[in-house]
Image: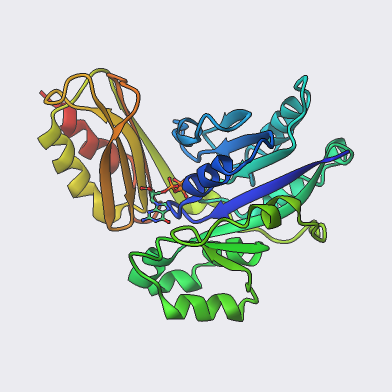
Length: 300
Ligand SMILES: Nc1nc2c(ncn2[C@@H]2O[C@H](COP(=O)(O)OP(=O)(O)OP(=O)(O)O)[C@@H](O)[C@H]2O)c(=O)[nH]1
């Protein structure tokens, strides 16, 4: 029996990891393995996927829709060769991925008998689209939405945009549910049969984005950290990381920044060292400027 695979796609910071955690919490005894791709060199998402997953494998420093396609195949083989096979595999694409690159990889002959693609879900950030309506015309955003069988609308409590809903209807994406409110239609997500994708379609490249990693050994000063992030934030699409502050010994914090919104929440595990991933359009922020800004956090 082939193992069904669910691909979760969506723009940077849309809420893919949050959605997968909701799915895992409702797994009802199903064994679900998760493969999580972070575009940056530091894989934070794999850590944020709840312990509820049967196995979590992180693939970092590249995108599984293009440069890491071979790694995805090898990881799938590994996941499927466990003594007890999973009932489902969930793949979290990176926010810069064109899901067509992933669905094509899943059709590779070396996996034909082992897996089958069951559904692609696109998580769409209603709040971000309301704040930035140009997103509706973004070619990557559209590639992700168009490749999806289901749309999960996130952050609808903050903002629910009629133009977005109209666009989704126009794109014929009717099975829409809201991660903020609706109960997750887990049965529909995990058992659907879908037509297999057509190989060879042109894909949107991830080279449009740049990912900047920053690490420091030991806690940093809160005011410097905030000042550096405030300065860089207008140029960022996404930032996330685990940080600790000299002012708060023994406590780590999870930074989440998506568009205009940033949150800093206590992280359940203490990690004295800090690590951060920033993602921006390559035309808006270069690595040198970003590193110079981040260096101010630890400058003496
Ligand atoms: N209010 C609200 N916040 C959400 C929702 N979904 C996600 N978030 C928040 O949005 C931020 C990003 O969520 P993630 O789940 O990490 O997004 P992601 O798509 O996995 O991010 P990348 O992998 O970096 O592209 C976090 O601060 C989440 O808590 C939602 O439905 N409502």
